[in-house]
Image (cartoon, rainbow, N blue to C red; front, side, top):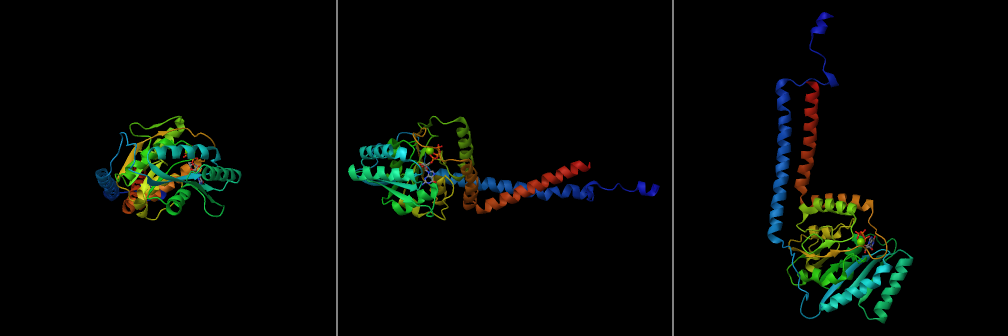
Length: 336
Ligand SMILES: Nc1nc2c(ncn2[C@@H]2O[C@H](COP(=O)(O)OP(=O)(O)OP(=O)(O)O)[C@@H](O)[C@H]2O)c(=O)[nH]1
Ligand SMILES: [Mg+2]
């Protein structure tokens, strides 16, 4: 019995205790792997940011009012879901602004059938088009033929719009129709592959926006910043030429951030930010839900792995290595 008591103590946790050599050696490769992964990621990001910065301009000053000589044809695509309360005001204001800027606009609502509101939207659009001569139409997606903001925008851009210069905006008048010519101008003038109505450049602002929404929006913007040099990648107010859209690779219309999706998957290099004022919605209700915020994280993961497939694997390995290292360090500390 005495002899037994004098033997080495039985290790806790049921595992052999690390002897001095391996105790020092085992964490070393893990630490090296972690450091290696971090530096690889850092270099990849720095390289891409530098390349993007070299080819991207950010306009923070005034944008010329006349977007081009003569009547340049433009398509304005507006996704709608229960927006009959905003359709008429939006139509009148969009055409007043585009005509004043010498643009020949077509306005296309892409509406996901919502019963009464869709019928009302169709009635209003028919009156505005047939009786008042506005070049406006509504495409209604019946149930079973696709739903959701992003796929509605893609349908509008890829299948319904006829002009070479295209703009997307919300129906709820949070995006001021008076800014439509300004957002289109860099694209029409050939200065941009993609122009974004931004709240975060000099002259831009977000009015009547709740604090909680500001915080979520700031966090979401920060998470997307490595993907693009745009100051407002969350914006749904943007313009692009058809040539940019043709470069699209594997578009995935999930969630609400179709502007970010297009910027990344069309490899838009020359991005111009145009200051806009973001107002409170005028009528109807927001469709932004918690589910959409969660979907945004999945969307981001997809875009990161699209842009940096190797880096994403390296980061995942680095995270696993770091977790193992922390667990091991804790185990060694617990055995002391
Ligand atoms: N076709 C279609 N349009 C949608 C759908 N969901 C939202 N929209 C439209 O997309 C635009 C933006 O939606 P909002 O609900 O205003 O979302 P948001 O501007 O991000 O959020 P708020 O600031 O709260 O208004 C509006 O014109 C909506 O009508 C949808 O499922 N299908
Ligand atoms: Mg809105």
